[in-house]
Image (tube, rainbow, N blue to C red):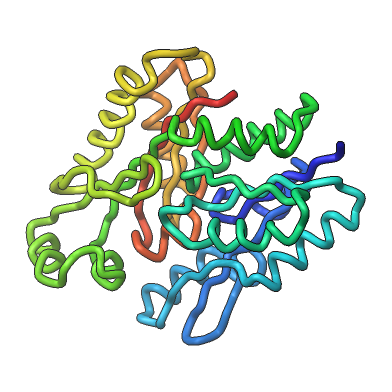
Length: 287
């Protein structure tokens, strides 16, 4: 069986990287003042932030059924027997539910994974899928294995501004105003389906410490059982300055010298809520 691996751009994998890896990328739609753009295709991060900061009406959406089916049909026409599709978490978007319903029309040739992940943990699942394909696993087996291990991942995000959480209705205007005056920065977590509040910290400098502490706590508790050689740590963010992104990666790397720490930009679906200058750290176990 020849199996294709597919994911969306919320994984942080660019189209160019996807070609190198042999992974097909579904660009996530972003609507700006009523016009639909596609992340990584005709919308890059600087333009996305410019739209956010200039007060334009910005929202994200799931891939349209027509676009998704067109890509599936194109991949199958290339000679693949089946597809493993790894969209963003079903708890953060209807992308999974819509894709799973569409897949029923493909007679078990498209397997949609309810992966409960986004950003760097989602990327880890994609790399696991690529590995499993190389080992000769079937698409159905890969779906089952990824879903079984889906919750073995955490990502923690520190937000520099409450403005976009307020716009998205995740904090009240009053709470946002008080938080801005006091310099309170929310720490958010994704462990499974939901984007939840993890802590409230005064100042981004303290946020950096709390993010590292959160990862360390997971290492000592949630991930302490099992094969620790398979555990990985990674960073992400919505930095407009690449030097700041590298500075954050290096800080986490210094805190965890036994791990090779990488960095990825957050996807637009998260950045639309966090705004720019958010930083994140994640921990997950790979196959």
